[in-house]
Image (cartoon, helix red, strand yellow):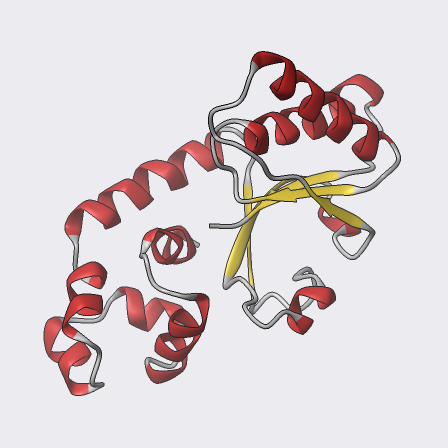
Length: 175
């Protein structure tokens, strides 16, 4: 699954990511591709630089190890059993997303909470409380996991699972 972490770090659209996965017959083949492979398949020069960037692969490995340590799972589009069916209706569906919580309820109601990366402490606490309220009702919390409001909304959702030990909600995010 490190391939999904790596691909999430490459700054191209989800549509482009899916095109590349299709050209290379899978995300693992794309991850292991060489310069010659990328040129052969007509990948743009700017995208080739991103794909072959060693720093991105190193960061992905670090993040992957961190995720394993803290129980954060990766759900890829190819996991049809768990990948939320409603994501398939999105014009720009994510290739993968990260989750901490109950994977069995991903098709339940969800709410996206997004906001400023630089917010007042009061706003951060409000987003945490609001997310906690949604999570307590079994509603999943979704965002891009940016600093600020996004982060605190996820903390609030995770607080719900710790407080009630009900594992009725999930906190999920995409990049």
